[in-house]
Amino acid sequence: MSLIGVHAGFAGSVTEILLARTGVRRPVRWGLVFLSAVWAMLPDLHHVLPSIRPWYKPVVHDTAVANVFWFHGVFDRLDPRDRPVYSRGMMSAFFLVFSVTEAWTFLRARRRR
Image (cartoon, rainbow, N blue to C red; front, side, top):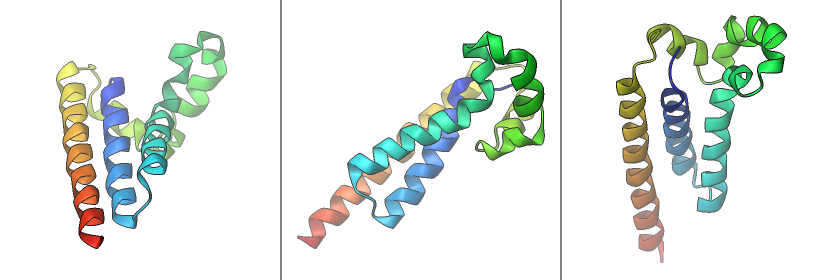
């Protein structure tokens, strides 16, 4: 099982890259990046709402369905010990991707004027 930063960082990075290339406006893009990160963490909802754990975890988190949520199941199997170093690394990569794509879209828009 991976920590939250791995799931949110991966989903946010991929979404930011895809949306920046398509020219989606900044406020919409930021909202979609946030929603994408939330989507990636939905299989871990049973940690936030323990009452749903008996039926939710076996149906969503512990099956291939979890991979629909930005490969959640794959990342959980890759890091079974929840090492924070991977979470910090993925979030660092996200902030780097986010900074570069935001600068790129800003400069691209500025050149068009």
